[in-house]
Image (cartoon, rainbow, N blue to C red; front, side, top):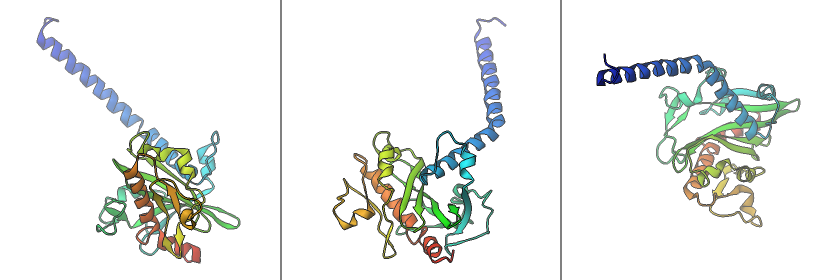
Length: 255
């Protein structure tokens, strides 16, 4: 076969594609365990960061030893052993009709469609009891679903930290949810007033002279819809369809 022929060119191209495909597929399969390990490490890092416990340069696994993973039944608001905390995949379960519930339009202010029956939560405890509780949150912003964690102090009302580890918001605008300066504005804010979730992201800046300032966080400049999305998702997960029943039980010592 002449090297300059069309048939030879096509044969070489197909052979090259086949070899490259085998290499890429082999790498994907061979590195799967490493990818899963890195994904888990990243998740643990974000949990520690949300709780204000992350220390750069120290082993994440070592730092995570202070964190206890538990499963909460979202209907009863109490801990459960219905699923194994070490293997339970909350994200996958949120799409499984057997492990999640459909939300109607009035309930679904976070635009998540379905809410899991069981949620994975994290606690930091010491000899005096619970120090912090870290809860998973998610909801739709402008372009994407934002996934993150909110950490509460042991009064289960004061925000210890908040952070998002995955989203597709616009860099420099909605993407400012990653800005440490904005995340710092959440620390110390209160969630509930007389049992009602009052925390909100407002348009513009919080007037610190007003009594309601303790429940408000500045909106993101130039990202109204992302700010609204964050406001809605936090209110959902702190509300009656989210973690409010669990936090009330935890505060009463009945979780």
